[in-house]
Amino acid sequence: MNQNSSQQKVNVPEARAALDNMKFEIARELGINFKQGYNGDLTSRENGYVGGYMVRRLIEQAEKQMAGK
Image (cartoon, rainbow, N blue to C red; front, side):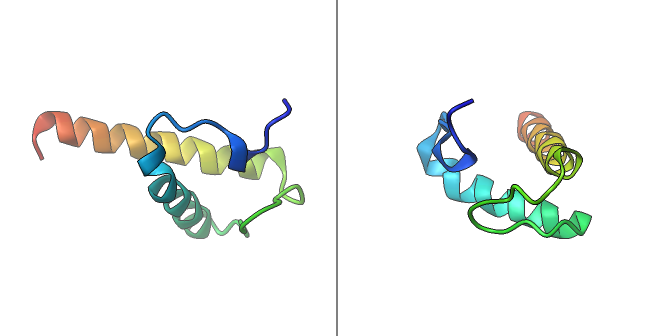
């Protein structure tokens, strides 16, 4: 893969800042030292946890929105 995370396409560009904030918030909650820029010192497992929890949270938010909550 030639793109790093800061260059990946976001379907709704206005959401990039919110997604970045969510990423750092979840990493903090999980006790993972995520930082701006390069995070190559983290394991695949640590990065995967952050991404997995982001997906879970986004699904929860979509379900709540669909349910009108």
